[in-house]
Image (tube, helix red, strand yellow):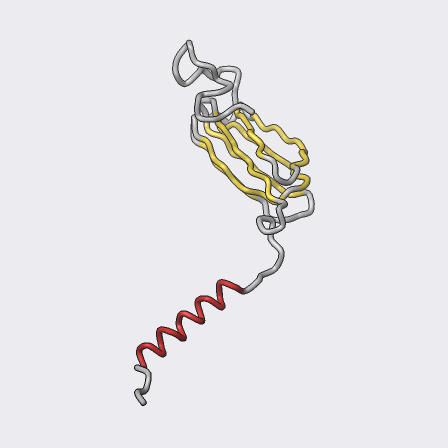
Length: 138
């Protein structure tokens, strides 16, 4: 009878190790429990913004920096959040910070638009700053 090749035994063992690692269960996560919130931040202004998303239960604080006309998306665990948004105008004399508390429900998508009074539509005078064509209204 022929003995198995040592290389094939190694490959079989490696395959079983990878399969077993993929089947393991970890601790509870927001994604696995259906408690995910999709949060989209849309900067419609010509200035930069600093956004801080702090869970009310004291979890990990997410800090986001958006350049002018930039959008970012993040998945968060559902729950109460303290949100701080600061317009970075480049001048120390003008401080534009807004703080509020919100409840984000699981399974929802939230769109957070950042606009200033001096914001102009990206496409010129005829554009619509509330929807620049990169998002769908629901």
